[in-house]
Length: 366
Image 1 (cartoon, one colour):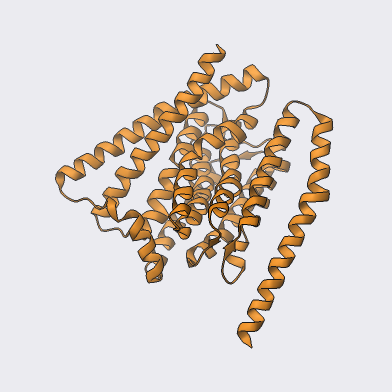
Image 2 (cartoon, one colour):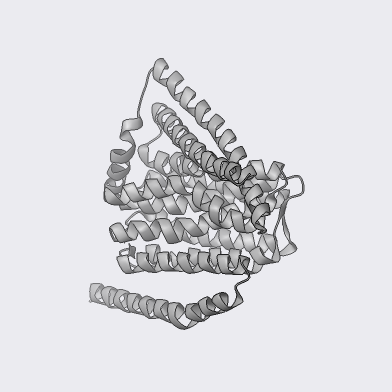
């Protein structure tokens, strides 16, 4: 039985990732064929496509009644996207982001994270909450398309170099792209079904909650497309794409994935006290940690920042594991290290960053 659970988890993840790749490829080529610019494709189609595993998982979980798994998937993926994906990308190359849309997206990410917490105060994210979140996504996409027309030539060229190869015309190409789209969607359905069933069985066998499995195994697995996209973009020095993919995927996770899940779940999404008072606040704190992307003049995430992001994720995951295993001493030690080492260190680094930023702006005025 244990091997069957692991087979379902592993097979489901592989099928999900492959399905997402086909979906992104087909949708991107179709979008390019009808004249949508590479920049808009990168900001919307690709960001949505890399979030499609989360959406497939959540819809499957919602109809199956595993709404804690659905919530854990969104919250865990949002935490993972910033701490791990941006952390890895920044370690590869310091992320100096010039794209003005990112400076809107990060505050918006913080706003919708706080909104999620407010919606969960009554213990449930229902249809009205889901409608509000999804309506916000529609407005966000519309504004992104409008704003992309004013982007600098440098940013336009960066996205064109990444996505120009997807421009295929002709009826044969269109049929082929529709086939890729259909195949991707089909694989997402199959993969999500396997993964949800495997994750639920694993949670029951291990005696842990669906929320924990969603926050860890499922969230990490469904975020692998974002990892690949951002790491490759960083290696190619396409820093706007590396950051835009992580931040954009978070916005899609919360507004589209959580919003649609809230709309279709028969009894809404159950928000436990653990999620409300620990995991969602961590998601908000992580979103705020991305402030250097737009707060400084250069919009820089240094290698040191990237290392801190990864350290935060290791500590967060270790805390979840120790809590699930009821290791009180280990959890207390981790909490002590967090408050007496990590937080002061972060405050010092942030202080240095703000001081350098103040000096740079003062010198520019002089």
